Length: 108
Image 1 (tube, helix red, strand yellow):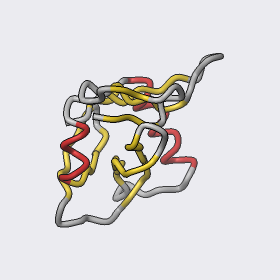
Image 2 (image 1 turned 120 degrees about the horizontal axis):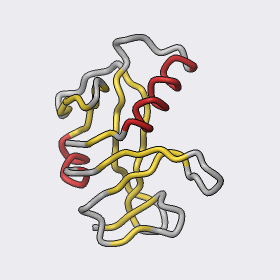
Image 3 (image 1 turned 90 degrees about the horizontal axis):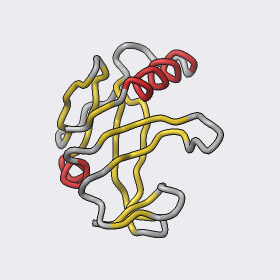
Image 4 (image 1 turned 90 degrees about the vertical axis):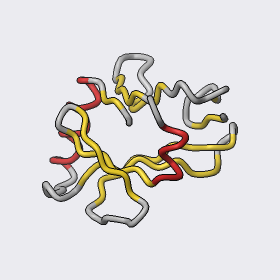
């Protein structure tokens, strides 16, 4: 399961509305190869259901994760920071053995 902070929830709801997504669109969280540490996070709004999807909810946000990505994401918290040194969405992943300096990629 992925946890969402209150700050991330508010930003996700704001972006969903700004981008004109319907209620059927849910947050999809993916892990794919790339970045300087080997794996990268990807977030998007999606209304497709895949056979490999696991769907769950936190703080009223519906989240879809494919089973392969879920192995890397169990226990992860999604946060958002927009302060002076803010980086946007940030993943706090207890499974990551290292992350790159910018926080965009990780390794397990």
